[in-house]
Image 1: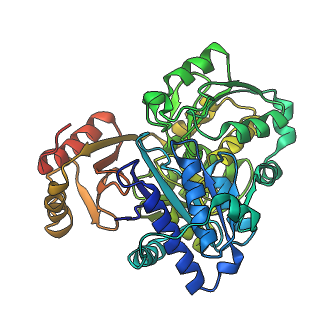
Image 2 (image 1 turned 180 degrees about the vertical axis):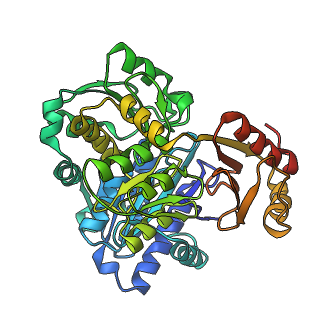
Length: 471
């Protein structure tokens, strides 16, 4: 079964992620494109550095070719946002990226993008799943070389127009004048070429770690979270860098270390950039966050006379709300963000460039910016706990949370409860707790934001004890 979650289709390599399933998905997309009468527009496909990613892109391309649909294949491992940008700029109906993003190395998958370079929404992915159910086996695929000779497969590398678009959107002159030193950790992924090209063009000095190709990602998750960024912290300190930047495996998410070697969470990054865009760039507009992202954005929005919109998890909801409300920026606590006027999806490469611009334009160290914002707006403590579970337990958890709507007894007074995406409880002190199922892994996730760590831990434990979860 090929099922789409919040971040596309993902499966364990050799189990669900197989050549046959990749071809089934491509065949279903080909039928969908023909039914929608957009097959003549063709499709663009990219891939990251995971095991079998390039081969999977080629399997899909050969399947499209057999259906008479031209497939433009990006012939070097590339960032996911490059594919989104290309779909948007060249007004293609669809694009596909072979990646499992920040998942463990045993996973691979495919992200699907629709017109405008957007993540496919739930309606689109349900339609794709319906087409998948109609595919007959064996799936027809052309010989790859024959498809190239027939012009049904084109290999190309459109990185320059993507990089140039970002350079046009940042203040290169200010960065050049600032003489900044940047540490970069691509986490063995695909961001190095794009980020280094942009920042070297702006005359930054660069220190790079984990740049080589390693399909096992050094034995760690290719996710820019604090445990994975210890070497980046020491690189920043040892080389006296102004900032350390890490990106996940396909470069759509970002993590940051400040000039003091402190890890800044994705929530901190969103807060910094929204504040910078409003105060220093003088750009105006609301902000969009998912329901598991910091409410500090609400405080900043209120300060500047703006509104903060809350949406379910899944970047497709953020990009849709940005379009609907003309929001200035949108993002999520897992590390993805985008800014109005750029692509309609998350982009760690552009976020990295914008953060470096922030340092140059403000003339402040990132630690100073961070401390200034906390002094002005106060401080929240965010906690995230992930619990794996056996598949047979999911209906029980689902019943307790979403059908019986059982809520624990908390120390803090409850203001309201929402079931927009999982269960979220809002407290009168401004804090909140959210329990939801991961859309990409067999995990139950508990997020909590409170004025202090101890209260956040107690609040999470209340749900942990209610559901009988184990570490």
